[in-house]
Length: 493
Image 1 (cartoon, rainbow, N blue to C red):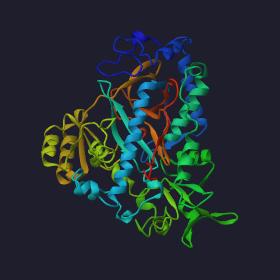
Image 2 (cartoon, helix red, strand yellow):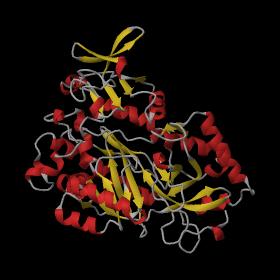
Image 3 (cartoon, helix red, strand yellow):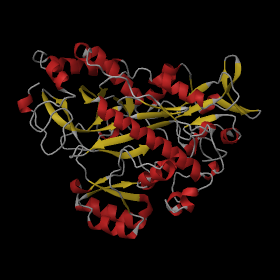
Image 4 (cartoon, rainbow, N blue to C red):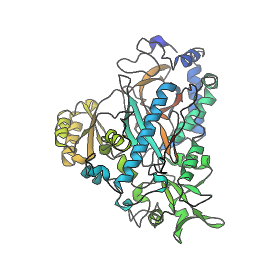
């Protein structure tokens, strides 16, 4: 690695300090990298890309001109996080998920947080992701969100912020596991001896989380993964996780409700299903309860769910907590339910539904990032400083027409990581999506999906928008932080 030619000016670089020397977390890796012969790194990168293509590790991009299916973009140079910093991140994520589960349960039941004036009820009750069909329901173990992907970024000052929460059907964990396997095969002599925290037990942890939240009284619960089918952008992940957990991958047509329970069709007849890890949006789960035109779900599934005879993970209605307008109140939500300050801060956020804040946003569109509150995948975002005046005018019109559906944030400069671009190492902006499992305990995968903006100067890291990914190494230092118990002494979250 030619350190002299690598420069990341004006932003925090994860690998190198401002003086050009490797940070302590990356020093050993850089030292090993420098032992590679000329051209070796490029050869390994090409070998990794060929392996991904041969193994069919892909994702779908709706409407992409070159076709829907693309090989998963992977960069060989990892992002490295030291053990001390990760311990803080892990505790912050555990804290956040506990509070958000409390919040969702409160929203659909007693609504104390509204009565106490902590979060405006009109903000939450007007959310597109609120599901009135879940009112009065409490899932097993009090867990609404079993699987969460939390997007983290680091700003210039080195501070890690939560950019957004993904509590509906978060994607990407299969690529985390595949990235690690690719790294171990392609970069074995560099990886070995680095004392990187293992992630290979994620599928086992996921299955245990699902089974822990099965309806009570079932000695040997059966779990399945429910997919909308082969045309879904995350279908590779659905098949991968089902295979890794050793459970059936099913579509809605494979399931049926009979005698008050959910069953799947098998060659030996109907078999009862107790836990459904669903990768289908709420609206398509049950045509008798949500969208009448859905052919992806299971008729009367919600009747069985509300009767407590099947567990859905994540629970319908959890999207109310990852509405980006609700996100602005998460520090207050943590304080209200846990009596603690947020360990991981939010990015400062302006709510366009608040008149004073809306005026500020409209007057500063050239300085802000403007986001719709319920889109995902990087769609609908206005990067104000990089947008044209026509684009800013169009967004201003949309904000005035429906202010509840928009938020704005300052344009933070995401940290960078060395990335192989042609024959050179260049700084590219990254974020990080750790995955959190919540059952009887809260498990945080050490690391997560580092997404990288492959285009120079871009800060849009989503794979659907041309981004790529890296393996994330969390270095071990002594004993790992034990999982946080999800329940209190009373047996509830």
